[in-house]
Length: 171
Image (cartoon, rainbow, N blue to C red; front, side, top):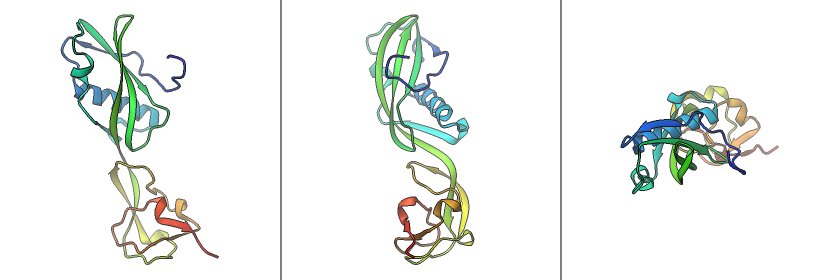
């Protein structure tokens, strides 16, 4: 890894034949890197590129055998992210391209099973745990995360709970 790159790199880089580098392949490679970095199962992670990149990145480059190397960024969370993708031909670095993408993570989320008025402390009997695909960070997954807090506003049944919906309970 180059200086300043502290993230894990998929080893060995993924080798593909000429003309087979597609955005779908890049999404899959990035999803593998994200799942490894987050310590999650590959099936719990989905990636959607913000814009097409494969054809643009390799335009005008002779491809006999190109390897893809994924370099995850400093932080990684559901929602908007970016990583570097390095294209190699043998020992020669052909191109380094930043890739922006949305990261979706399938995880356990606490969901209200009833209406809860403003100022109420959430208890275990008010929530169910559902497995949902989320595209932003901050969802509560355990009731312990909400201990000592109260709701900032009225919350309808079916609301997935996030930390920003609560404040420290008033004494």
